[in-house]
Image (cartoon, rainbow, N blue to C red; front, side, top):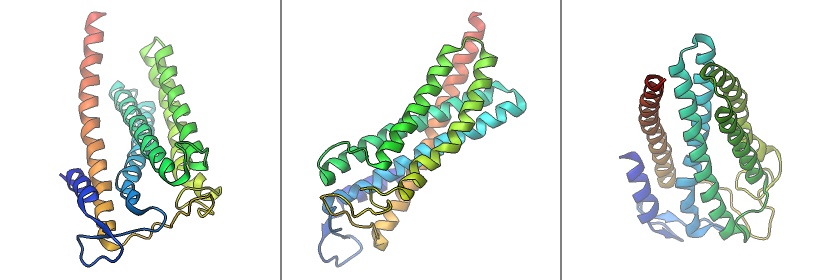
Length: 225
């Protein structure tokens, strides 16, 4: 419900130079109508971090208890985190095309997301290369903890420390296209917060479905043996 409201509001509410009511968004200089992407791109990035942090937590719980259910939850969280990270990269590339002229500019935030995708690509490669359930779960847990600790750094901290084109980055006025700081008015902020909540709930729902499916797969694999 939250995510549906955010999507409808983010798309349908007009952007005008002089808003006269809560059902009008102001035009943001340098972004114009493309500012609507903030209702989707940022919540997707947040959901990816949520997935990676959940993978870290469940990986830690597995190391403490040796309960394979935590391994299932950890890899399921990492998978969803990677999915949302890819979606955030796609929506960010669209934003980059409109504002900076190309889909990819090796901006610090784009570079950090690329590194993060490589890290979790290696995580799934590691899992697929190990045959023993116990060894796979143990090494994956350690990897997910180390990788999860770096996720907030690559997504939120690194771009703010290193100058770049991305809004909110240090020196974000660089580049041929002016980029405004996103000082959102109250009505945009409400839609943004609703979108964050909606995507978070979507993550929880998808995680529950993925974990239940993975449990069934695990039980069937044990019966076949």
